[in-house]
Image 1 (cartoon, rainbow, N blue to C red):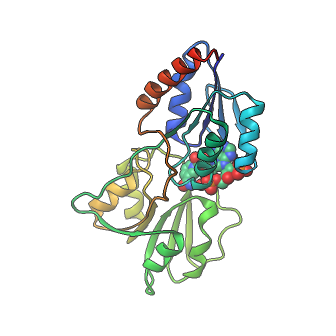
Image 2 (tube, helix red, strand yellow):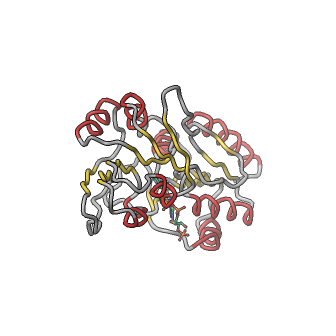
Length: 254
Ligand code: NAP
């Protein structure tokens, strides 16, 4: 039975797992980093925690006799993506990167693009502003360098311990977020600028559309470079690639 390892943590990984779970004759494992306290339930077996770098993943692929590796991690999970491509190269395991396309600027968008969170904080400028921050709770350290701003921070799990900032509020939530809800949130907190990643997809686009409608600035973190690999942008495309890969594997007698 072909064994497929999906590196997850995204809506697409979940969607792919759901599609594959409905197919008999496949042995699927979904891997999570283990950062989220209560991940969404999944229809396939889940393993959790790092592999121990590319070398650890190479060992895992061998030990578990994985036939196909799919990197469906978030576009900003650059270490895991690099390790996955590296491990696939070392082992020769067929490999696909499933990555949703980035959002593109639309008429009315007021985006400033920066390379990282420190760059985003610098781009806020010296005067106090009201800032909505939609980043992972482990990525917030640079905001401590700019305590003059009012921050509203949204994360999946609570930020613990709270940040030592004079003006900060928190909201927890897991997408999808609607434009209407994000519009109301930004208006309620009189937000002036949004710091966001260019995640792509619909689940977290609400804040971008709401910022446009409200005429707010968005400081957008540029996507990190991705390793060269076969790539798909949708679950549908990944399924088509997988069908081919499994046909080839069957021909090899897997
Ligand atoms: P990262 O910086 O690229 O990864 C750091 C380390 O975490 C990796 O080297 C690996 O440890 C472990 N890891 C990451 N993803 C893993 C997975 N799916 N299964 C097993 N181990 C994994 O990644 P990150 O940005 O911290 O993201 C962590 C997870 O959150 C990913 O699953 C990602 O899809 C999800 N996520 C990330 C973002 C984001 O903005 N970065 C947003 C939403 C969801 P070892 O080296 O020990 O193997």
